[in-house]
Amino acid sequence: MTFTAIDFETAHASFPCEIGLTVVENGQITESRSWLIKPACFPYMNPWNERVHRISSAELVDAPDFGTLWNEIHPYFDDRILVAHNAAFDMSVLRAALAYYDLATPYSEYFCSVSLSRRIWKELPSHSLGAVAQHLGLHFNHHRAGDDAEVCARIALKALENNAQEVTLNEILKSLNVKIHNLRKTNK
View 1 (cartoon, helix red, strand yellow):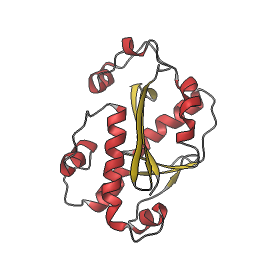
View 2 (view 1 turned 45 degrees about the horizontal axis):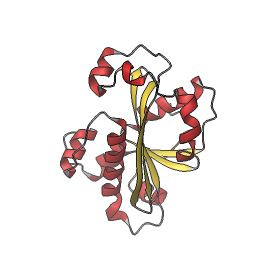
View 3 (view 1 turned 90 degrees about the vertical axis):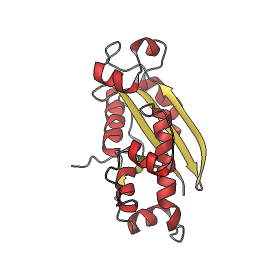
View 4 (view 1 turned 30 degrees about the horizontal axis):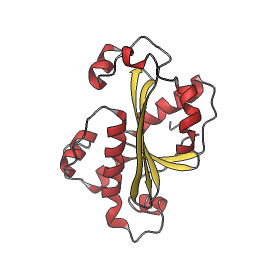
């Protein structure tokens, strides 16, 4: 079970101001990191977004833009299976940032941990990141990309642990009827 959990916080619309990545190798978290990003709309920050994630433009003055940061983080994406909680949002931010900086979209497949959690914990009234984390007894600094990515990875690992009889992650997801998407194709 190998994948990378991803989470973005945004300054405005699809302009990222923070990314979190948690790497899972053979069912174990091996790395969890986050980076602040100077958004393309800098110094503007949507006040509502800023209240949610508490990242101010002052904190982003010396942060690299996404195009510069991509040189460091693209290995986390190449030929990887990605997971995000509400993947449609995070993948749209990733696609928008790649397009804005004219960067090639990596070959990656992804799935959504919201969809996965709905299949596993049907009894929950909400499958938001906070609700599923609370159900599993996970404590974190919500709306900070590094913490959100790590909790997403832990949710995916917990949800998938009872399916060890399956051979690959793709087979497990297929058996649970969780869709696997291609990052290069938009879902319409």
